[in-house]
Length: 98
Image 1 (cartoon, one colour):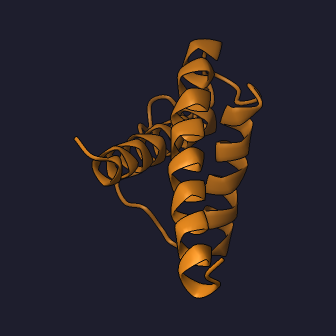
Image 2 (cartoon, one colour):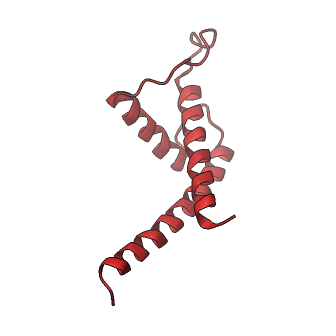
């Protein structure tokens, strides 16, 4: 698999882990019987909550999510960062030749 395949797979897994973690963190003792949300609403509050959960996973700060998930989440995001940094460097070199 090439680096673009790894990038797609890593971003997909990262988004899925974040969405599931956000839903699990949102459950309360009273809300367990209600279950997970059936649809995703895309408004400003949802997007901000998504990024808060994302940063919370990187800092081991999501209630109800074991630290093992965050330990898996950090290297996954390092792979994403390295591939995106490499692509950014190639783009800058294409714009400004050395």
